[in-house]
Image 1 (cartoon, rainbow, N blue to C red):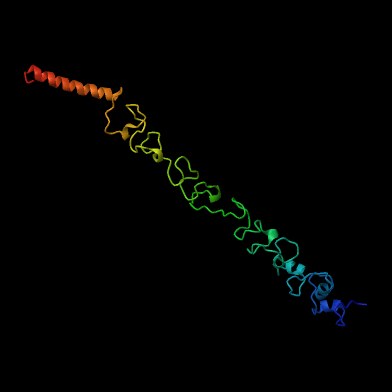
Image 2 (cartoon, rainbow, N blue to C red):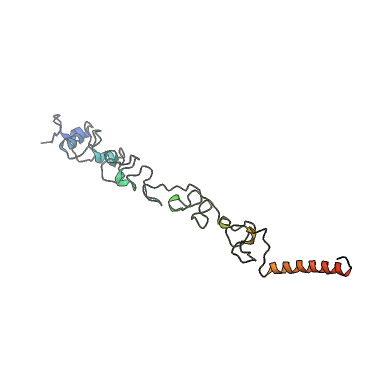
Length: 207
């Protein structure tokens, strides 16, 4: 006795041989009977067993579980089902990358360091704030060992304080130093010039 699972009064083997019924597995049982009995699933309702869809490339099956991807969950809607998506809740990434899921691997200032690792993400010259902060260069233009951002006398040496009062001389342009050093030397020269002028006039009887 020959099986006639689809009850069409023809042996199943003949239905398959005459291509009246498909047998994609093949298991000598018409596909419609596999589907009707639950032996095979048809999650996408295309009247073909799912395992045949995936095996023959009719449906994608990225996780190789014989279930078409179209029938599996894609939480973030990025076209890649959750089992194959390294960031199943991030629609912009399918792998964590450098910054991890949910964080873009963007480099806003194009300095070669992604924003998530760049402490100055909008300053292409710095990746850390340094002393002067993002957007301000840590440079010492006048070479006085004081960075420009903290320099009280740009272009001059902040360390020069002849009168030793704690205020750089560049901030006291009208003050004649009275302490030792250049201040006393200048004062001595000035007094010498005045004395010579005065006594010279006396010798000539002008005074």
